[in-house]
Image: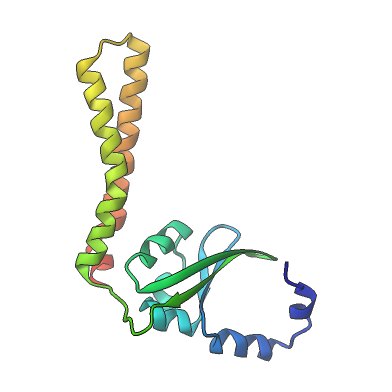
Length: 165
């Protein structure tokens, strides 16, 4: 583990200089799991502005990274008050951010496949097998939960305003 006492003794302007001049794109995640800051290198290597990223959940953040040219992504747990994790990113040489609608839709489709497979499987079971009332109720409840999950994913991921960014 890094010696945090060293960093605690650095003047704020040194930390600011490190943040702004780092060769790595850096994103900070707070203890509640939300993006609270990204450095300028992060913006340049991903095409995602700080204004866009602020407030994203860590899951949303990871999904958004799938549509970028990031070559390396390292997540580091940190033990600093109010901070949970830092992401360090490097972009492929010569790459430019890929924020095309086609790339985003491809990743959205990947996210939707899991609940769709569950819905299909549970529906098939309900149609082809005889179950007692309690088991049928449990399977139907699971099926409804998966439909709700898929609906939420569609509402979150297929927001036209997000796709066009």
